[in-house]
Length: 251
Image (cartoon, one colour):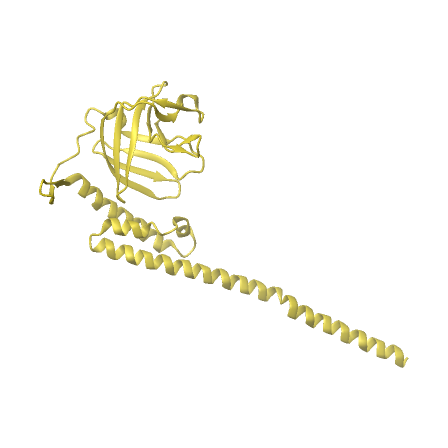
């Protein structure tokens, strides 16, 4: 009996030792979950603080009339993050600032133009309303992005006064100002949009539309009429070797 008692006590001590070792090696599931939550909260707080700092920089630039600098600061923010819980206020201010910046930048584009004199000095003169689209109404209106393959572009709108808005799938929008003129460009890369495929072709352009975006970037679209009668814009640039970078079609 004494031998049996000693064995039982020994077994109990071994079980306790294994149990304690298990706790020290693997930790409590509850503690692991708590640590994971703390890590997620810390990461979210870090992103929130970073975005708040960027918004503050963009706000100051906007207030002092540096609209391009403000937009450049905003471009550092991952817009997808703004859809997360706790980012609602920042998201609202992001788009409000963007609209404000673009409004003033577009206004400047419409009302003034840089003129460099023979002496090298630069002045501003008023040009009035953009009337370059008079006679080109066919190329104004709404366009849809043709090669919709998880790209950011959604739709493009060109107004008769030259105002351009590109709406994107992530909720952002690019604003710009365009002029249009006749074009004799030949062999411009595009899609055979009448086939409904991504088969490429080359086209002869009817017009050239030059867009100045609010961030200062310039882009050129070549407009033409497809075989099915639809109006098409292409930037003529290759994308992923066998695709076209941007092609837009009117509905």
